[in-house]
Length: 191
Image 1 (cartoon, rainbow, N blue to C red):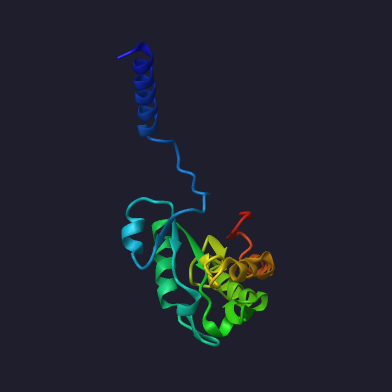
Image 2: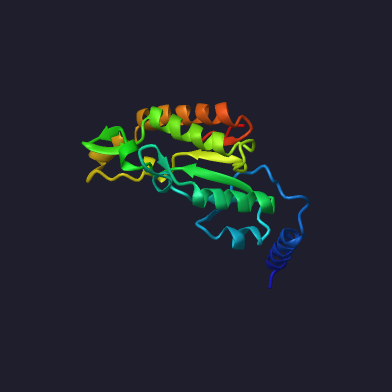
């Protein structure tokens, strides 16, 4: 082996050894975690500091104005009890809340719908109303870039910022009004 090869192997070994060292305190302010779908107990026992709780809007608001918080209540309680931060994506609105139309398809909730539901969640889980605390809310998720209209010419207009921007703003304002210390995520992350 050449001198250059030996130096490369030694450098890689030192780098791996440094990576294997235990870190100081974990950064508890990073709102990225593992997505969980009802496996909260297993995830929190693993020692992670953040979890992403997957409870779709459509599974919570089952008909207009009718809410079932059972699953989300249990997940938030488990995360809070374990000292794990929870982030919840506000995603997959029920069909009756999808008021933004593109290509003749009701695709997305409008700003008013997002404001109402985000405010409801943030008020319920602001740490003051007996239902625990959600540390971070994602305003929307893959639905904003998941639509395929059969061609790029039909699809790209439905992914325009004019659909998502006002919804992001409305969701952010609703969360901050009800739970001022909660993070809202989508670029940029704000406190």
